Image 1 (cartoon, rainbow, N blue to C red):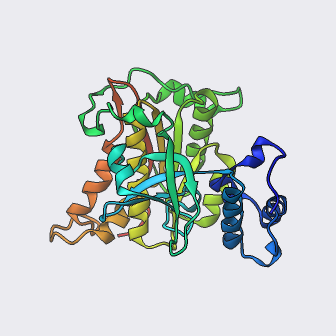
Image 2: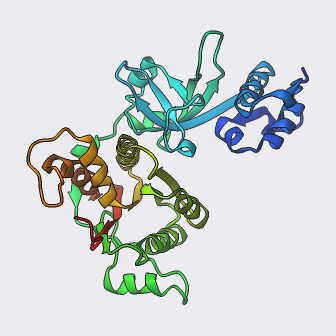
Length: 335
């Protein structure tokens, strides 16, 4: 097997970069690493072979993801490319690492990883290089989200970008959005709520590139998800209408936990949710019935979790903010 001596880029591989490569690009990487019979492998097996060859050649492999801690004490780094679904490419995080760095569900972790040994199923995290886009030891003196001091928004987002963007200009004039704001876009179906969200997302990413933005699509059509991914410069996380309600709930929990951990590290975070109505419907399906039914057949307990999601938005005195803009559907004609 040939050693890699061409460039530094070839000495360091990132697991997520490999996942995003096409199968032909992976074949080229395998050829550089001297892997035989790569053409007969599935993509998943090819990624494994590339990473093993990389470590054999004394190369370094990096990976990242959002931590989900399980009941047994260990956790996995879930990939946003798969909407935080459990998968074979997840990275195992040991209980000792979780205790040492005081990790919580939602932490964005990146670091050096190793391929699975014989009898193991998952990649394993060797060394944490960054935690929530900061140094690993930056989290030792952080204050947990619930203990932070909430304030009224005192700094606004500038939405206007160019002379043709009338929607953003009107929002700047009539309904300015502050850092830490909670906002609802309330309108009937097919009136352009999603288009307005795209406009807001692109305006914020253009004028405020330091902001970490997440677009959360719940119970939407797959083609709308693709459209949003191509038109918006932000992380797009989705659970489409063909997924069960439990999946909608899991995705929303991962997104809000990730946002809270970033705010604890004094980052400005924006979540654009489409839609909070469908999220409430998912919780109405999942929560155990309380016997108290509100108008429209909604259980009284079902509204508590969407309210907590929406209420997490706040401006923080110690630094950082969480802004949530959500769409709500009215006048659907359903009873």
